[in-house]
Amino acid sequence: MRCCGLLSQIVLLGLLLLLQPCHGTRWAHVNDPKSHSRSFISMQQRRKLGRSRVQAHIQTQSVDSHDLALIPEPSEVKVHSEEEPLKLARHGRVQVEASNQQDKDALVEHVLKKAKVEVGQGSDLPQIKLSLNDKAQLPGRRDEAYNLQVSGKAKHVLIEAATNHGLFNGMMTLRQLLREEGEHVNIPSVSISDGPAKEWRGLMLDVSRHFFAAKDVKKLLYTMAIFKMNRFHWHLTDDQGWRVPIERYPKLTEVGAWRQGTQRGHDQWSHDNQRYGGHYSKEEVLDVVRYAKSLHIEVIPETDLPGHSKSAIASYPELGNQEFVRRERPEVETQFGAFKWTMTPSDFTNRFITDVVSEVSSLVESRYYHVGGDEVPMDQWQQSPQVQSFVAGHLPGVSVRTLPGYFHEVALEQVKKEGRRGIVWDEALSAGRKLPPGSIAMLWRSWEGIGYLSSLARSQGASVVMCPQDRTYLDAWQDTAHDKFDAIGGYTPLEKTYQLSLEGFGADVLGGQAQLWSEYIAGGLPNLEYMAWPRGIAMAELTWSDHRRPAYPVFHKKLEARKRDLDELGVNYHPL
Image (cartoon, rainbow, N blue to C red):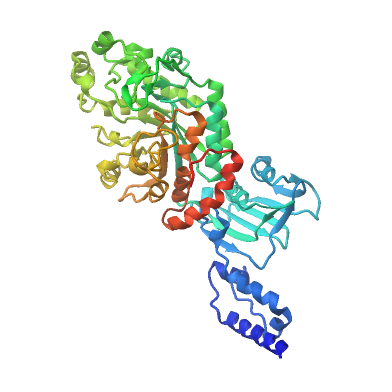
């Protein structure tokens, strides 16, 4: 009777399985991948399979792709729970097939080293194939999309993409799939088809207010890469320090890279009287750019003008408005904030701007160049007879009010000659001069209304990157305890960043970017990482997934699992 009862239960379970609808991720294991027709199993075959196989099919129904904890969330995931995972023995070998050495080296560096597996030869070894295929069926943005298939049964991994960048993204997903199990590393049997919603998935670092060495920048870049971020905005100059060498103007680093103290906390009238500064060598800049390129991250240099330029004016006083220069003898700024110093309109200033754009472009290989344009005060120009005389006599159609736009034009014209797209902060949209075609505006002034700023960009034919201060400025507090490191103020917790909208109100939205302004990031790399992560990971997810991003509780759960990646890298992230 017990035997008959058991058989009855198996038959009943089999009937229930046959009656289930056949669609979606959870039922991928019973679909023919070529014909998409369902593979029915006869009742007699089910009886022979026994209870264990029936239970395996029932368990497959409950598999959730979120359990893989992949960040960013792939476009399509099928978990083949009826297959065993692919098991790689630690210190064992795999056979790798790739069309070029660059991709093979990337796999070794970013995946196999983590798994402690080496490359070998042999038909009995597990195989990883990296396939560049122009005709591959790919979702999302094709230039970064990929397909990934893992089969434990076949002992095979295939990553397919149309570009090297797509293959790299597939490798980063494969890296996240690695599971340590004793003396093995297991990779679940899956089929993934994935591509980003947005092309700009960025992080900005200000190295002027506080300087970060090249090795620290590279650590930040690697953490970006494992979550598929692809734009690094390098804010190289500001009132408090000039960090990039310019051969034609050596005083920029001899003088402009050093200040005679730094503001203490939030008291603008108090500083520590300790000389502070630093700058990169040309070799260091080139090294950072090469390293970023190996991670498929594009570096966007920024040299800010015509405001935020006091370090340049301290180095070359002829760049400043002369009545104020003679009276005040400006030095590199020791306090934080926006200051009255602006470049003066002159032939020398124009040569300086074009020379700087040219030299920085020769150091930083990129399709973009950021010329700043934010927080430009009019005070000195309005009070300077010399400036007003020059404008009236040499700049027809320009007024003091539209001088910011004139400076943008000078810089952006040189950017165009360098074969790049120019980028500005959103103030440039209302600076009195229309931006050149192909320009990009970074929308940061959230209090003005992102819809309004988007409409300004659309009216000028400019694309936009979403950088609203209230959600993407990572120098704000991210908790209420305030018990570790300082912050500029405000409150931008992880969830608030994650909820950033990429709605452009008709403007062309390239993506989004998180900002690491460093006035209050004074504690070196540990402080920088604490402010950057995990909020930067939220930016990675939302720009990759956009409208299909998981609900915040799901993202947070995945993030808990992904902490192991940050721990392995020694990242000093903020507790979840």
